[in-house]
Length: 94
Image (spheres, one colour):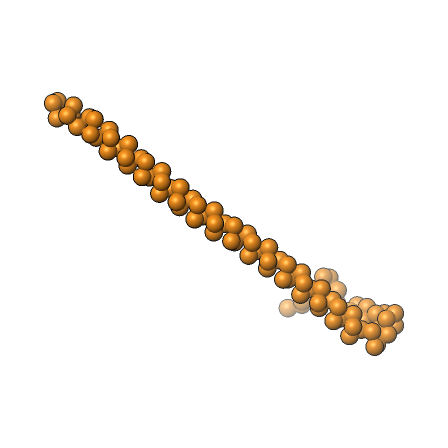
């Protein structure tokens, strides 16, 4: 199976690396790679922070929704009990 990364083959990558070495020099390439690595790490950390914020927010909303659902169910049950108390004698007469 032929794996192509961004439609660039092996010889094309070698030409690009040769041009990079010629432009920046062999001693600057590790510094450039280190800077790119740090930048990618910062981006990864930022995306993880954003994901965590979204997860925490959704958990808080879920907890609020559960409490709200409990309160609504409690009110519904109290209304049902009130209706049963009110209609109980009426149902028995028929």
